[in-house]
Length: 308
Image (cartoon, rainbow, N blue to C red):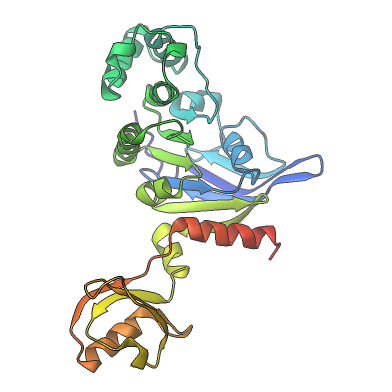
């Protein structure tokens, strides 16, 4: 049964220190129902500490964490699914037995755990592995089993740490589709990963942490617009160098390939489009240049490392 709280995860000004190391410094975030929130950050930034604080494994020194609109309760563990980056399976036991056992630990009856195990093995194209020992599976297939264990009890909150680790492209596409289904069904997904392409494909909002502090937080579309390059890819009959707002032009590989038109700092692609229209040029293609999330990540991480 889904929890109907609209903000299932709320972190308010949470700080945590380990000896002289500040792991979290007044961190605040929210993850809404049916939302996939991307958790980003360099190695050692505080992501794992934040996840463990949300899961009530680590107690914060100050601040407040709310799960389903209140402080974490022991019974909430059955409504939160966590896929850690490390393997958490019993390697010498049969796959189906492991999933059924983990399902009962999350409050399922043995018969429900058995039925859902069968369902998830089929969903992951792994029905034939039910009797095999976990250690006999490839790294990618073990990752699928771990994902099944995370989702078996239909948790309202799903926390995934590098869910595509070890997967081939087909497996990654399958798991990506499942993550989308989780959000579409109303589950709240917190996705921690270094794969920026995965974040761009799945997440509507992102939270980036560096040195224990929030350095980037908000809607992915707004963030990409904020860090957008002042340039556009254009295929037209215009002489771009005659435009007063153009700084430089990178010509395409052929006459039917668009040029990369870089604008002066105060200009925008909309200004260039208006100039093209008023100049009477025939415009066949016009595309605002999008800054890859990976480039934004690197830029923000370097700035945080420099202490600015």
